[in-house]
Length: 166
Image: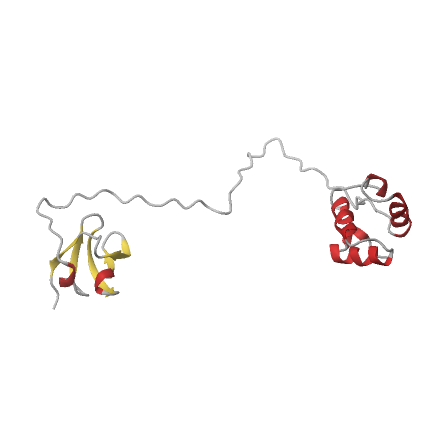
């Protein structure tokens, strides 16, 4: 015999339909069973006749303790337990503030080409790997010496060519 608690709402609805009950009763029974009631008498919004029928055909079984686990015993000389969080917190690395030369003047966007050695006002020196996008929204992939590869939107990036590679 299958217990009502192991059934879905739809399956309980089928059982109740065979007993001549309306379909909304399935949600009521399901809700009560998963609130942890120990008997059908606690299901006060169900008719008494239905509660008696369900109790005789589908008894509510309390969980049974199969085995008890012994608590962990610590040795008196044992070192304290240190918990390690398996998901380390990734903190963004702060980019040190870089002060460009006083004569820093950005190179016009349309003069930038892949392969050029550049200087950025924040990330320092690097090399343009590629330039993509339409003229109004050009983006450059730049391999910086100290900060790895970054993709910058050129209309916002303050970069200047420091060495033209032909």
